[in-house]
Image (cartoon, rainbow, N blue to C red):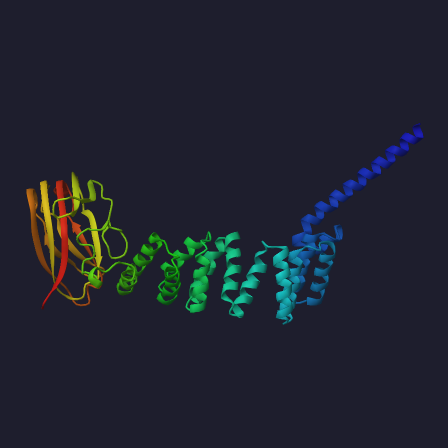
Length: 404
């Protein structure tokens, strides 16, 4: 019995030592697999990480024959390894056999669908073939898995979008609402390359791929870049033109709710001002109603972008007030995008009064006032004199050009 027990103990000890040795070898192989793959393979000859790293080292060192042999060794142990096919594809590419490389990368993409280098190569290959939809399909995979890549690649995508076919492919990809859509639109609108931006955004717009908010942001970006004429043309194509023509001041009768987009009225939130559009049976039917809460305000929160050519103009508006109280009265001011501010019309400073029509003449100077904002402002810059109280109604606003 004692002899048998000793034999069992020797066998068990041997098994434990062998297992411990295997474990130590695995730990050492994993330690060396990336930094020193040769050492790692000395502990585990079939370690997939070490074989892949060695393949990459041999390939980048231009030892293509050894790299191919190592990659095949990896496939012998890991036949489903997409990275091994990717490395074989890289080797074929470096040898100049791009057709064979494409076949190998296609296999790599099927077996390792999340391998970013594979999709990057396939995107580059598609671009060389002018297969822009195919390239965007690969970019989409990359951006979904690694959103930070878009920040680095966006400038290149914008540059390529100068080509109409690529712009259409980019727009088609954006229409699928990928998670990187917002960042790409921001990149397009933050660039001053008007051709690329216009082609992508127009392609999106023409196929109904822009939301109202996105369309508004696009127009605002054009105006911020000083491209008011282009912004107006884009907007004018989307609105109903009464009598076939657009008035100088669009929606001056407030018959439609202000959209805060394009060349329509914008309603801004101003502390101390309640602002809404009302519809009443008595004339005028539509009107803007301000309730001022006796607080200091820089402006009333109502503004409208305009594209007025140099010349003489007249602003007409109907107003009504109730217990209105302000130091100097509110004013309609034409603020040039890059130029002077022009007082177009001053309103009564206070009191209660029924509907009355007010007019004010103003001049848009030559060249120094390209693109304007019409705003209802407070001429008092600060302090107690900036307080406004009471109620004010506005209706039937018009701007007409006068003969010189």
